[in-house]
Amino acid sequence: MHKKLFIPGPVDVREDVLEKMSTPMIGHRTKDASALQRSISEKMRKVMYTDNEILLSTSSGSGLMEGAVRSCTRKRAAVFSVGAFGDRWYKMAVTNGVPADKFTSEPGKPTTPEMVDKVLSTGKYDLITITHNETSTGIMNPVEEIAEVMRKYPEVVYCLDTVSSMGGTKIEVDRLGVDICITSTQKCLGLPPGMAICSISQKAVEAAKQVEFRGVYFDLLELYNYIQKKDYQYPSTPSLSHMFALDYQLDRILEEGLENRFARHLEMAKYVREWAKEYFDLFPEEKYASNTLTVIKNTRNINVAELNKKLGECGYMISNGYGDLKELTFRIAHMGDIGLDGIKELLSTINSILKLN
Ligand SMILES: *Cc1c(COP(=O)(O)O)cnc(C)c1O
Image 1 (cartoon, rainbow, N blue to C red):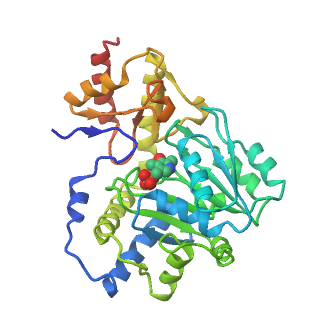
Image 2: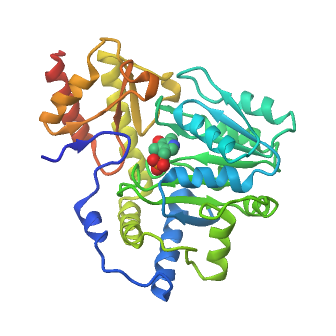
């Protein structure tokens, strides 16, 4: 039996989108391949609210995260972490020999604009990374306020991880001044895992030109140059299957309407938060609670693995807590193409398993 996925990626994929994955192959050096990548880029610019160039990577989102910090840090990177994915970005910098420092918030607390300002005022850093939506703690960082601070530091390259939020909530890349905004297919965009997408500003491109050791596969400058010189092609062989499906799914997303899509995610988030507060508690401070997944404090000390096993028998799957939070929290994702009805079904099933009410 297929379990309906309420985990923070991969999400359930619509049948018609899955079918597009089996489109017959085309040559990746053809005009058709260029047209496909150009079409994806035009639609992604709308989803991201940007005029910047769009890069595709046949990898999951982590590939472009690693590529961004390695390709564009000239001096030193300031990595702001509110959980596991911020920590991972720091590890990527260190293991690539990129000088970096990590600034960690208390568990459940956001990266604040004050923190960013204080760190950047030292003048030591020329690149920062921020996690927009931290999937391990359910925090959505205050990127509007952080954008205000970033206006004071026009020379710093601003990288934003929107892997678990792009397509589920409004992120206006250009207005926020984000130089490299990264996402991947298997979360709010509602596609199978295997492709990452980012926007890249001219400032980030110029920064990369000054970095000598950018590697090959995740060299953002190489990806960018190839698009310019080869008319929207990819340096190696991309997952054309993902590209067919992505191009198609982006039409579905734009047809739904971005504002409608964001409103649907928010409606689901509010419903899950209310449920969480009634029976458990929210892990993050509510003001910073994510619109695409809810991390719930396990105040009843339920056995999360047991709950998930029983949910599995009913055809659903949720997530335990991430890392150290494994049994202390559990996570319900509300991202992609599910709707409020699906969420209501899930929560009433949980209520009957746990004999709540
Ligand atoms: C899932 C996730 C990642 C990792 O993305 P992959 O596509 O699995 O490599 C990075 N950051 C956040 C916030 C995520 O939720």
